Length: 577
Figure 1 (cartoon, rainbow, N blue to C red):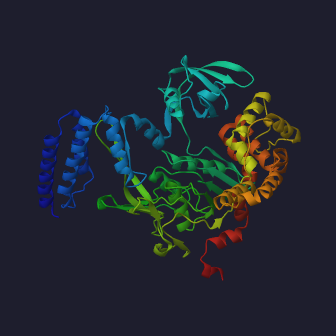
Figure 2: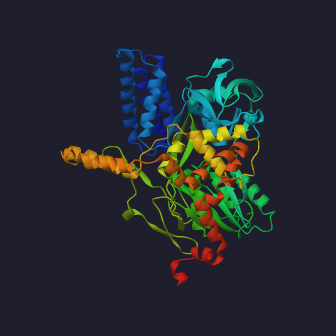
Figure 3: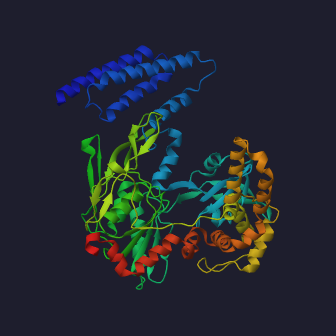
């Protein structure tokens, strides 16, 4: 379509929309119909002239339905909630990442993008009818005023906190930096305590920890991709390189859901030369298609590098791991990533609201898109299918290794993780590991450094006494199979004949919790070590205490120590023969 035709159609379309608006909108509720209509233009959807009438017709129908419901529905209708529900459901039919952000949600969205908010610096959770502090951040008001994990919040500014959920409590705890906040907390062994905190600007670091995983290997945990993520990774590596013994590095993006695309480029830039393409994007609006290249001199292009991934490594995490893989700059260790190859852009709407809309797909340097689900072709029931193997395409890394699109980033080294025992799962789920760590912290003023801390036999016996009589029942796999067998036998009318044998088997399988505690002592002690270490050394203890038992870290260390194997993993199969 030429520009003259474009502007003529645009005028006709505007006139039709305004006609629709004034014809049907009898009340203030329908102002948003005009807002939606005007927003259509900001997305430049005029390339398809045949859509003009269809869009206007459906907006007319939508306004009519909205008016009739508001006028005649038997009960009073909350206009704002009804409209938001309609918008949310409309966007849900596209993909999970296209979202409407109301004015009231804008602050939470800003935190997701920047990692900054005004508050006390603590994670919270639910315990019965009250809110419990689960993780205070080191160096922020909660920790400075000796608020500890396990403390129960009874009152906030003199008003009961009973019955509030985490969302409600979070809003009350947040506020302008410099403002005071009075809390009444309850601590095991000490009773009720009054705390007065001064809120401050909280910045959640993208890199919550970096250090040495062993004598020669540095470790950087990358938890998010908000502003300055690239700078934090760069600064961490520069600091680690002050250790002359370090000759390799682990970059951990497990559990990282992604964030800002340009920060992913900045992170790759730490390890690859300037002017190297890291990712490109392509969408409906061709003017927005872009190639993102490294802009700055790298920190280190030679250090051996292992990137840790799992199923929760998504989006920007996949740009980093996929680009490192495509450029043969390092090895990926762990599990296949999530498979999110879509890019979102935020667009402003009226009344301080916004829309986050999927505008493009991204492609790693080899040219592949790792998007796993095809939202453009839904099944009849509305579900979304994965890209079938038959449609996945082969691409080549810089060295000629085969990689594939359509389903996340596949690691060079896949790590099979052991499954927690049923008793350990139960102790975690019932929060008894957490509770004992709280109890232990209140009984012991100091412990050894997180890397060295380990409960002894006497401590484990104390733990067993602490949980004695507490509810942590569970069903073993054998018991579950037996229950399934019983149900099947009942359905088929055979159970009466085998009931006696069933009861005997059930009795023999009845688990002995004390025996299970002892049998799984090493695993349970490991969980206790990590949780207790966090009470004294906060977030950094989460990593230092887990290195020796972290299967992904240990596998990465093994590969990085074997230089020949490391180099072999970065070569195509033909070069290995």
